[in-house]
Length: 554
Image (tube, rainbow, N blue to C red; front, side, top):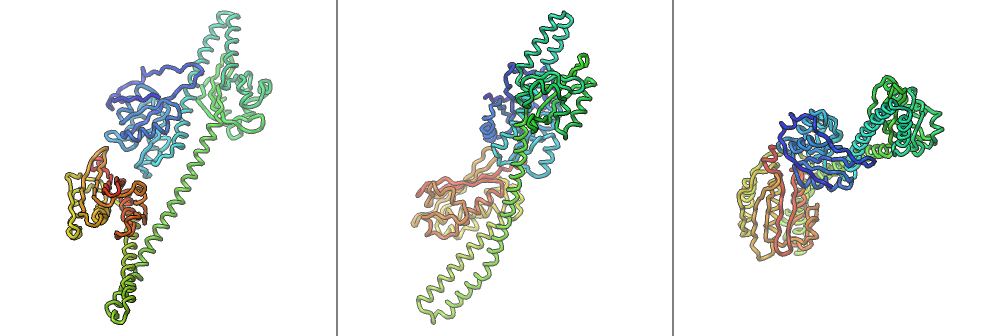
């Protein structure tokens, strides 16, 4: 597998003519290896596409910008282009528009592959630029390979048909010269043509101007079950599927006028009564009153295409069903969390009144029971408030805007000043933290949970030490909150971000198990990610990835 890169300005694309862009033909009888162009400014996405498509056995070409892709298209032809929408400089839509301005590439299939921009406006714009598909992450490798393989196969067929047509033209010229040279040369040309018919793996046939089959090669019998003698008593009109008969009649009318027929697909009847799909083209030679047919069995390809359509429909149905269930669960969660708080407040009030007004009449055991009721009610109220916050994160609209992280952290430190003082904690903020694309209230909630946990989950007798830093790479800001707390085992480092998940050795610390679930949900709603690096007894380093301001503007 060969990977190719290049760089060229947009002006070179607009000024370069098609002349001189030639490819070396594939060796006769061999299926050509086609070129697939993958355009993305992110190396990890290019590697993912490469890993997904490498099993197709084709030549995968990488371009890391729209300009680089245009330069490659000046040099070679591609069976299909996988084009990212969101790229710095020249985005995918502008690149696609320039590709369509050049005659040689105006019909090259383009599949937009992107993790963003799945709105109807983006999708509509993609298809208006001639895209054949618009795929939004997460990408299913099997479906992507199936879609790309369809265009690879179409490209192969097109190239094979072009070469076969050229061979036929050369054969016709040779035969004409042979006729002028004499009967002996004519017989030799006929012998060569018969060999060509016999050895060809594709279906080759000759008809008269009315579509009656005069000569076919052995591939016809392999595909349709008819012997050559049986086919000679049939016309193509008798074999074609009834739904396509009018279209075939029209094409033969064009052939009788000397027009060439481009690549077509249709169904012909098998001897057992079923129908097989053919990809075919034809050329007429009016001086001989003959029509030459060039066909290939594409039944398997059409079945695969229909299966892809079916799978897409099933997938859309499942997504819609899951979305509906998720919305119902969120509404149920919000309703239950909100309605349950009212009786809890009454429970707390009555228990406090009992302790304040009737404590002299209660036994020590009764007083303890009343205190337990108050503590349980407060814990339940805290849990329900966390659930309400989690539900709001899932339901609310969340417009994103640039937020200075240093200001957000400083404001939170001021809010937590009393708790920091009581715990004698030391918080170090290492500037600069940068500006990230986020939702300010949600960012404050995420930071409050991360710094609050760093203050809380510290072994007895140890002074909390917290360090807040930030780094930038690949258009992202990674904000890290590092502590000297109890640490987390590797087996729990993913689970703790789940709802109601708590560490087994953290039972002595207050909490509901919702805080880190809020952190993950908030990060995802802002288009980011969270994670943790930790060792038991040696503290933890929680990190939050968000897009930086420059990336947001691009």
